[in-house]
Image 1 (spheres, rainbow, N blue to C red):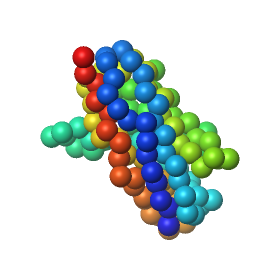
Image 2: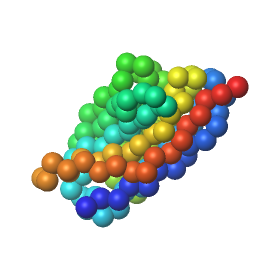
Image 3: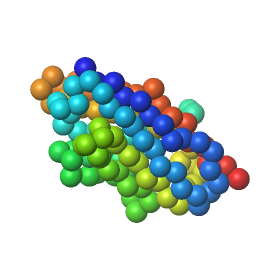
Image 4: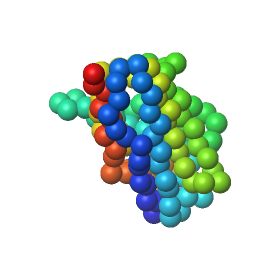
Length: 117
């Protein structure tokens, strides 16, 4: 099993930046891919960014060029650097981890990002 704890959310003005962090523990050596999802009020949860095998990244069109996902294996950390934040980025952001061997997906509890003036 894998445990995920997110941090770094908060209130930021439009155009500002935040960096989300996710600490993974447990069977971290079995993690094949990690990602960030978000869910805004009244909307479906959506994939924001993912990183596979430590190097292959994928981004939602809405965040390309503004968000950067990265993983630090030594610290068991996943990051999401968010720049040029917009009102529509307001959501609860979740960290995820996928284990290939068991085809299991783990979720963190989420961290709130609010973009407001």
